[in-house]
Picture (cartoon, helix red, strand yellow):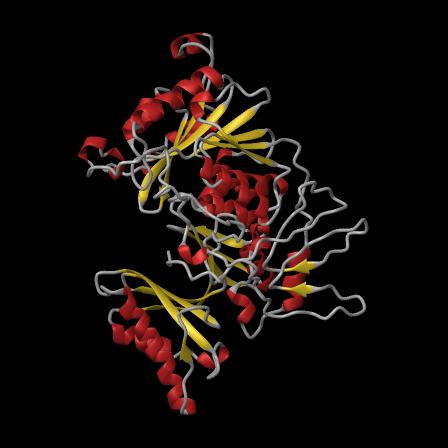
Amino acid sequence: MEFELIAKTFQGLETVLASELIDLGANNIQIGRRMVSFTGDKELMYRANFQLRTAIRVLKPIRHFKAKTADEVYDAVKSIDWSEYISNDTTFAVDSVVFSNEFKHSKFVAYKVKDAIVDQFREKTGNRPNIRIMNPDIQLHIHIAEYDCTLALDSSGESLHRRGYRQEAVEAPLNEVLAAGIILQTGWRGECDLIDPMCGSGTFAVEAALIARGIAPGVFRKEYAFEKWPDFDSELFERIYEDDSNEKEFKHHIYGYDNNRQAVEIATQNVKAAGLSKDVTITLQDFKDFTQPTEKSIIITNPPYGERISAPDLLGLYKMIGERFKHQFVGGEAWVLSYREECFEAIGLKPSLRTPLYNGSLECELRKYQIFDGKFNDMRAKGGDIKTKLDRHLMSDQKRFKQKRDFKTRLGEQPEERELTGDRNFGKGKYAREDRRFGRRDGEERGGRFGRRNGEGEKDFKRGDFKRSRDGEGNKDLRRGNFKRNHDDKRGAEKRDNKSFNKFRRDDRD
């Protein structure tokens, strides 16, 4: 039976997400702002969480309704038979996103939803379910746009960008969903080498390797919210989890470079945790020392742009980037994500495509550069062109860009930037973790929520410790939570065993 689903994403990645959903077999796809709605069955919902690279979370709407006051929200929520979803022994939480002149405070809306549910149980049973902010049994999400309200079950739980392979991070690491979306927008699927000359914690490199190998991003996850639902089908999800029919051989290579030794160490740890050392090489090297690759390559990079991370000479850094592109990447294709107009101007090259993308609250641009030998006018005189038909079609849609954007703000109009001693800020000489709660203790391992006994014909399936191996006949040993892939990564011998983590704290809702 099909039902409505909503996949949330970053603004600018909606069409990429829609394309992913088409590949999954979703129906009735409709693109909205920072979301894509579609219909599918339970299997598609499981697959969407497990396989989508550009989704932040997947919601299952319970009720659409209109409300002009908080009391109307309360009445609409209370009219739902909550015994279908929650019992007195169930813990639940409510988060909210509100864009309305009538509802000023999103938390107040969440409280009204909670009150309606609790009051219904009190009236019917004389008791009530408990609220648990961290790791509840049921996570509810209410979205209000003026008077239009949607109440939904959150099937994902922790944001899907938290893949699980990241051990450490530099300051202001690139979001995994955004990184995957950028790679997919370039059209690269592993047809040539990929280079990130300023790789930081290696997010582009790892996400690119997962795309090239056809590995689902969900293999690193410990759990999803739908696994706690009353109708959870463990056999169906186990079958999805074990399905590696989309995995493939990657015949090229991915290179990450950074001029900070600690960043290189962090990126190397993340690559190893993802089991992708065969496909990714991380090297200590300044971009100013970059030389022409011997193999056909594409560059995708996210330099500092003077917000959370800067450089002593920011415009000088971008000028150097343009110089390296022009003289040491002839015939290549480069994609740069940045924020400030003068940074792009300092590159000194004409982009063939500009795409608006949000990195957090910053409306950035992803610009594509086709690098050619000689001067632009000489190249055009010989019949050359830096734009494809698709590039021209996309660039003709000026509605993609705001007319008055913060993007145009000049460097001199910004507050004084922090003093830094290098291209990246690691704070007091040590790298900054993505989140201090993401740390782990020596020797501590995450225990699984459930385990299956090894019996005749059964597979070991312990969610706390994930290990995946293959023998020549395709048998697999699956343990969720800890994951590692052998660096030789041959089809006949593959193991995954991730380093242990402490439990994540739920991320801020989008």
